[in-house]
Length: 596
Image: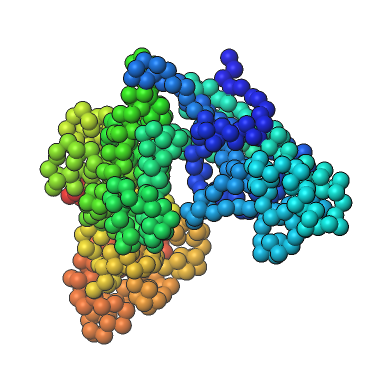
């Protein structure tokens, strides 16, 4: 059964639907990103009679109002936003919001003698052979006779017939057609996504969060357009605090809202541990409030879906917008956001480069917000959030099908005490076999961005461990101040002995070390450079390291999970060294995890 219709419509008809709100243009693909020359080219294509492709709209379902009547759903544009926005700018003279969130007008000029279009510029404004803004001709305020007469008054030498023909073609542009593919309202979001991917020639992929943003932005009845701005603006401010002044200067209406007051704190915030995009914000705002993890459910709820009767009701849409608004306010709340980051940092994750899984971080924030809502003691919240965060990283819980995992976990956390559920997961996935066999085996990789290595480094930060062979510099300092990872068995030494890249670049051979110490270690075998270190301790000359006693040296090695036998090791011992260090690293991670 066909679930869509394909029709050709006059451009003026489509634009009238946009003006009346029958077609909503949510900023799914973010603000208007076309440059002015691309708008010019689109208008030229229409003038020349070339096709400009199809746009795709997904009809919102009809919803039952409180009085029992039915309200017909709007068409929501999910592909073709840039083209339709370009047409509203050039033909109707409407403002557009550019990539810097500025309200601008794009004015296209037309030369009827040359039958050529250009973006309006100072030179064109001084040239009377150009008609300076085609929207003045296309908006219906000037008839063909006035256009021709006015032009000939300024350019009496021009050929009247040619000018009349050119202006006639120009004002007929809105009569040209554009294809509209309209998707049925009862299509599942996955189907709509698949249709979009198959039709879109540019290979653009819409996320489920894009569809949520479309539903939010298209609903002005429940202030969805304001909510959409709140989500967008917060994410932008989190990265660029200077954007605060831009909002004040250019969006005075939004600056009056409660949303804006709740995010003002970002204007002086430079923390970059967690810079959420709109996808992250929507997921975290939605999941703990609705106890659901699938954004397709949120799309349905914002449309007014009654999951029991399978009908759509306006009252459900209204409730869903109110609940989502609460979730967004909880997310952007300064106390919540900063307290959450403080918790994550207390586990040793002091830098964004230690966090590879944004989904794990998102769900950790979900856990924080949910436990706070459930009234769990604040001290316990910190422990549970950190344990869940590290557990999810170690098990890769949200790396495969995050939505399914989000949905399952939030339902469990909402139904039973978090300590019970977490214990179930630990007993099932963090058994002794995991710590003693699986984890050491997982550490057998050369990828420095491995989540297991990141957890190991977080464990070192939390333990206030010092860098390898350092007396005063901590691992946390080296990470924060962009210190470097170096090799315990020097890379050049291993390469000279015939080892390949994948062999010498092993996690178990990595350590945070001061560059000046690494230079002094050179490319010698451990047995050789440790002779120098032990000699410096005995002679107190500190040529290589600040470590001043054998006891201090042993403590440093243990803190960095380096087998003490390394002081006697050479190339023949390298494989044995890696195996021993992996076991030590795994044990440190285990002790760290259960200390959280």
